[in-house]
Length: 283
Image 1 (cartoon, rainbow, N blue to C red):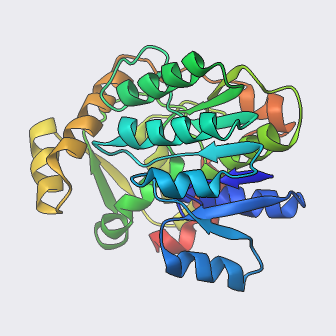
Image 2 (cartoon, one colour):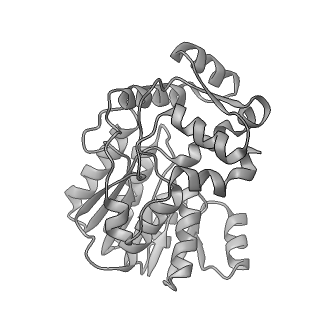
């Protein structure tokens, strides 16, 4: 039995779809009773799991052989994922698949540090593992949809950094295979899209697909932070994103990995395909 923790998140939702399509036996775990009820209504086996309540994890992991987990960035990520690792070890889970981040092996930026700590905790337990370390997400551009729709522009302090962003769906495809096929234990997969692109190049693709001019407006860190604070984004998260952008500007995310192709047998989703598939959101 496979357990998918945080099954209602962006990656979890796609992974549930992938495992369903593969006919895999799995349980989708959610924090919300409403999400559990909705999953049951769709014929999906579901359970409760709250990362902040270890007793729910212990119950959800009973009889589980493999577990996938992913947490959104948060100040308590190391604590919450540590709870998962402890519960998985107690349950004698045979394989843990952790979604980590690009660069977690070096802990070179704020968001990477807690992921590296959890990776090290897993390694210390001796449990069989697979680490998935994706770069930035193509779907992050959806956060700019309001200004793209209303102003034909999006704003960011990225400069001309190149990042080989990846689509959520490719991460889910890799995760599904690592959970259902042999040969992935002890691996750490760096996951990227097929091309490292600048924001200017993304704006060009958006313009071509949407049939209107979309511009990338480069802002200073100070102006962008003020803008995000105005939108209500927590300061710790803004500072983490700015630190990640500095990491990108250092050329640390230009490398294109072959892992998606190697694991799935198919090339990763292109940025143009992503925009085409989500075009309505930008219109």
